[in-house]
Image 1: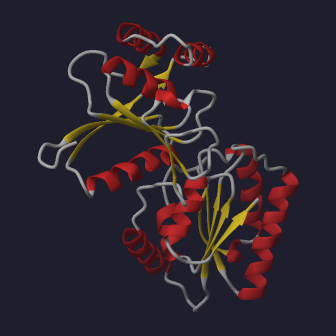
Image 2: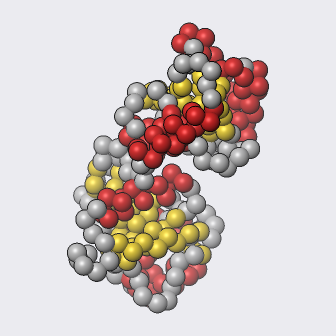
Image 3: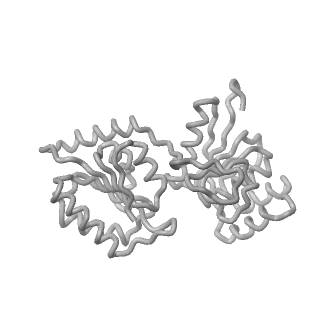
Length: 287
């Protein structure tokens, strides 16, 4: 990448906000040093059956040729341009995009960056692997203290202030936020876990007179949200505002982070935890 001509970037998106946000965070850091032209490509793997096959092919001792990579891209994925000029760099996050990222690197002979764990692929399929975790035997690892993200602390603070103004609080009760994910990344939340969380929310409200801002996410699921909704209905005074993802796709996490004096985040989501910590207020990880 040169300082004068914008580098053309392909951001491969799988439709999952946390994954896209991490890719955008890397590109935001690059844009501070280089001019970028970013094209977002919404890609989809045509079925899970392709995963073991692509993993085997990409890890083979015999390198995949550009012609083979192009053929596999056309067969296995939708949403990936297979004609015309290519990018200077490919960036993506998430298992849905990992094979497309590696194949584009082979097909177009361009540099590629993947964010996250490699899901059995050899690190040599990428020029760089970015992770908030230490990954053994990955010589091209770029290890970060926090997962990257497109989080804007000033914008979150402004959105939080607007939210609080709209709620028109009648007293000086502090606002605490709880961001709830769901099963994934090795975690599974039981009915007992959610009951314990609800008891904590109620106890904090009674002891510290806090008003809660509560939201769930894509991975929370109907089972957990039904249990939360029952508690919300039974204890309305404990909650200043709430949004359940299954009932509304409105994204309020940024404003909740910006409004809160303290943040409570379920531990399976590294992106939510990183955004909470970037706001520089006390954060509690829930597991």
